[in-house]
Every structure is written in C-alpha cells, then in structure tokens.
Length: 358
Image (cartoon, rainbow, N blue to C red):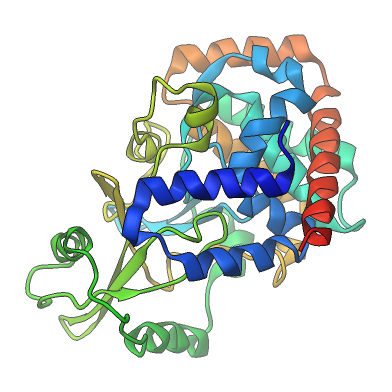
C-alpha cells in the first residue's frame, strides 16, 4: 500500500491528466490545508483513498451484493432542493462518485463519518450503526422520497434560512468577482442552456466550493429574471474513484442515473451534459454543516433518516433491494458499527500521518 502522501500525489497527477489546463491548482493547496485540519474533513477530501484501502480494512464488504451506489457518502452529503412540483425535498445531493459497488460501503462510510464527527459526543458507535441500519431496512422495504412540505417538520425548521441569511446568499453571488481568464466555452454553453429563457447571456464566474471536489473547475452564473435573481452552477465531473480502482472497464459518469432514480423526487434543474454537472443554487438548495449544527446531523432521527435515504438511492432496482435485504439478514446486528469503527480508526491514523508530513 502506498503512503498517504504518495497517494495524494498519484491522485492529483491523474486529475491533472483528466482536466488539463482546467485544473484549479490553488484549490488543491486549499484542500491540503483542510486535510490537515481534522479527521472528518480528511475523510471528505480523500474519497479516492477510501477506495484504495477500504477492502483491505474490511475485506468481507467486498462480497456484499453490488448496486449503483453513492460512493462518497458522509454526513454533509445531504441537502434540499425543489422538485418539479415545487415541493421542498431532502436527500443525497452529491453523486459525483456514483458507481457500481457493494451496497454496504455507502453505509459504512456514512457511519464512519459520524464516528469521526462526533468527537466523543452524541450517539455511541453501536447506536450510530443501529440507527443507520434501521433506516436503511425501512427504506428498502418501502422506498419513498423525503418530502418536507407536510412531514418532517423538525428537519424543515432546521433547514430554513432567516431573511438576513437569504439576502446574504444572493448578495454573495451577485458580487462574486470575475475570474482572471474567461470560462471555457463548454461551461458557458452549459450555463446558458440551464438559465431560464430571457435571462440574458451568462457571465460565468469561478467559484470554490466543497472539499472532495476541490481542484475541479466550478463556475456560477447569476442573472436577474422576472423580477428576481436566479443562479446556476456548472462543475466538472470525472470518473468515479471507485471505478478507477475496482471497475476500470466502467468509467461512465453515473451521476444522472442515480440522482433520477425511481425512489427520488429529483430536482428538474439538476442534470449532466457530458462531463459537466449543472444545478440550480438557491437558499432552498442547501445542506446542514457539522460545525454549525452537530446536534442536528448527529441526532438519532437524522441518522435513521440518512439510512432511509441511502436505501432510496439503492432501490432503483426492486430485485436488487430484495437481495440486499436477504444479505442484511445474514450479516446480523454487529457488522456495521464494527466495520465503521475500523474504517474510522484507519482514516484518523492517516490524517495524523498526513498532518505530520507537511
């Protein structure tokens, strides 16, 4: 196994080969600093490394039934959007690394992220596993999108921004500085196609965001339309790190397929064009961050609901869901928290080694 420092270099060399001159090297430097900050952020930033080591840590997971899965699952990979009916929906909102893999990996990575984020507080490691599994089983048996218009009042309350923060949101993007060079033509076209007719020609501006995707180009276009602001984002996609490591014959982008699965009420403004993901940004499209609201993200109700939503994503094939339920029954009650504990311990050790190696 390569050291973490060599793994970082290898991955970024590959990313540079994929993106060429579009690689945002300044974002990579920011990413390295984030990786040195704490274990949870390190997990978020290094999905490719997870793909390299997880089956060495938990080899039995490699025998679990395969499904089109999220891949880079963690506590902050959930958010809100408006569906085609204008309803507020909550669920997984980042499928950049979706790939066919053992279903158990999404559950273990979510549980490991919760262990790393809890800092000794919140539910026990055993309870984290039990809650996620309970929600996951419930979702496999009866998958349904998580609609916030009538139900889940507690979550809707946690997600709604006050008026002052809504204003700050729009002002931030309206005043975003232009880049030092024009956006590539593919991003200009993707944003122009995504904005509503009559909103004018887009003026894409670079935006830095996320953690794991730092280094990939990301542009936003702000426009005034029908008396108010609208905003679209275009971000580069690359093949999933899981496929690169374990399924090199399948380097397709699976983002759109899993996002639009039968058990999800998708955002009609979320779409993939070639290797560019375009989505709508708004105060209604947001996630809860662990440093601001750990009491929400680590609550028993939320962990159970996250497990439920992972099942929604895995349930596009009803036959596969039935196979997974049988596999869960055979695994018993202990496997998830034990695997997550081992994975979290390995991630923590690598984060400390990376921080020392500066």
